[in-house]
Image 1 (cartoon, rainbow, N blue to C red):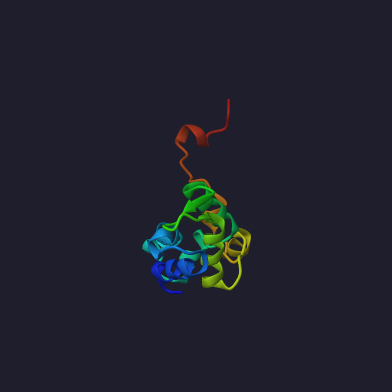
Image 2: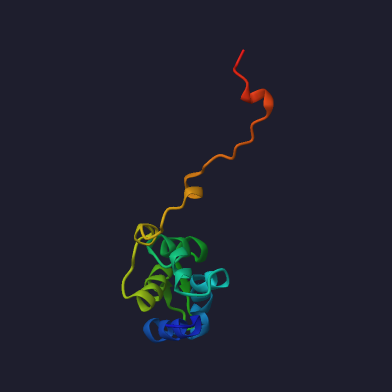
Length: 120
């Protein structure tokens, strides 16, 4: 799906209520498009840990406009499945990152003349 509103409409069909009931959760999943405007933005939240983080942020359930308590985890799982066809782990995404030298935490050479000399 291309837009959070489409996900929210899908949630309303699946769980009841209005699309607006679910829009904040779906917007949160796709907020990372502001930093990375292609599919790779999904690596930040479209995984099992992202779903559990959404639950921490929005609560275990939301009450939709018809009074039904809907588990936030179910809404997150729906979003990720609609986008990816499955729920990957964060490891699934991160294992595809090509390591770069800077990622290893290399230290910058900031030696002064005093530190270059042999210790006393």
